Image (cartoon, rainbow, N blue to C red; front, side):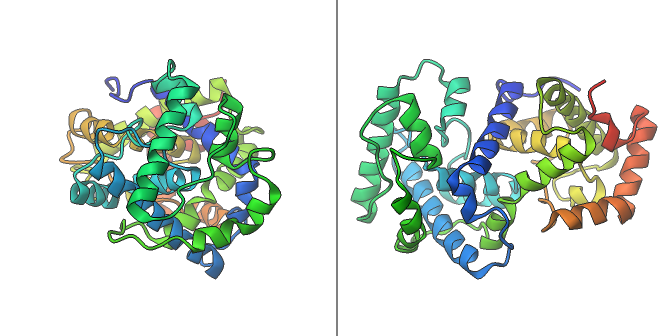
Length: 330
């Protein structure tokens, strides 16, 4: 298969993986990981976060001359929407914007890839401008701006990690602060249950990788994942004609190593759309249906699903290995 149009694909995959890993290891994780996708409190908070994400997109639409900086909750919301190409395209078309990297995301890891020469001062200038536009537009605080301007404080601000930038009292009151946010006049079509469910994806990914290879990620494994994703797209292009109008996950079920690269590809919507059309001869972006609602469900589906069994047979016939074994570095 020809080269993808995603810039720095390997590095982008690492950035996405580390973003999830950092969120998992910070205090932010206690609000989501281990929660049920239908937990009432989580759904209420998710509703407010989706409203903040919606208001952020309205600012992007209104001020295209500025590069706006999303907070961690807005960025996680964007990533939930981005892995649903069809609903994401509806939002993009309504607002006439692309939800691309780095156009919307300015997290420290992505900056290392897309804007390696961006100074801390310029990053803070963008962040302060975002906060100013937000407060002028909506009459409420955008985020808690750190006083010290350094790479360390960018990390703490973005991931709400630990003192001295954000103290424990902030975490106690964080959910109350989120609940106080006003609704958006325009709302993204992302659903609350989808957002909460997606916060568990990395937990399931960790469990799966530790069960199959004994660890979560390495340089050799990431390269394997990229190769598997190329094979996966080849399978789709060969066996799923059209692709964009098909429930592809129901026909070709990816493994976790494939899925994290698929997420990376979708994280660049314009490149993903272009690659689906040019490399796979589809009429639009290949749809992606996120995983089931629990790791137990995933294991059950992998063990009993006729679709997954068929995919594994297909994979072994085409490439000589089972899908669940192909990602293991030799």
